[in-house]
Image (cartoon, rainbow, N blue to C red):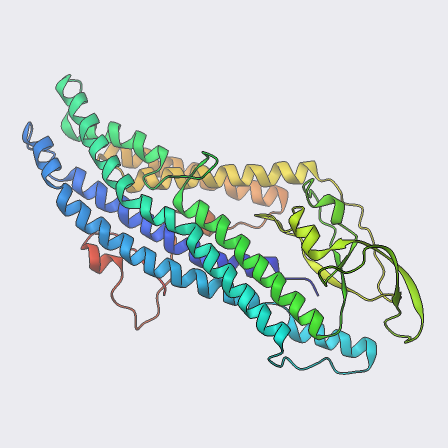
Length: 402
């Protein structure tokens, strides 16, 4: 049976939620500091700049908690992804086809190597996220200073009062992302968006690794790639094709032993090894393909004829766009310094929420509410009392699951 993509996505979503909670806590902290003393006239700028030390301390606590919680959660998520490989189903399938029980999951050298490979994948993902952690504090302080400077400049023109000036300056910075991160290509990500992508990819690859380990333990040597609608160009060459699980295995049109009839040879067209397919782009970030065991002489490749789904792709793209609008307006609501700004954000959230409801119903899509919010929660276990709220002393519901 194929890997449960929704399950692996849910594992990764739990990690991304931790980072969203951290972003929400940082946003609330900056907002509270900017909002303090707004009625003190010309003393506002001096007071806000004097508060930078306190802001730094509060932000440092959040970053420390986020780094520790996030790194632990990444390792656990990758391990959970590996365990999510359908072990029992694969062994049962091998037993049904051969009449022989599948090999037990003993600690063989191959399995130990698999565990080490997944551990290396987890550590590589933690290292990939390290630059994000390092960038959070400087970015937070920079946003705060820019907001104070922008508000002061607006106030000196006499165009508005201090709170409205701070709101106007801060809103532009929030729209750009308080915890934005630029990757090596120059693309700017929101913190939790980048984490979601990186961890989802790592968890999916760990699940593939676990799946393959189970197949090899069951004596399976070949797999086929499922046929999905709207696949990308990197995956298309491997859809509905057979891959060899062993690195260095023969490819092309080969003769393989019949799965049910020992001694009988059958033709199998093997387009590549799994390693070669992955190097060519299969299981890239956000890839939703999965593998099925292929049994020579028994399995049939049934092409579903869904090589393109432009309308479905457009509908999914529109859903992602609506999610971005909802996240953006929820950030603005959390960062509102004036009643007018808060009400505007609240009204926009209601409008985009209604649009999302209409869209998912019209196109029969699955609504992923965790992707619509900057701080949507994971309720912590009862024994965890010291969350970010306690560290901050801020009026924000920031729940972190370790």
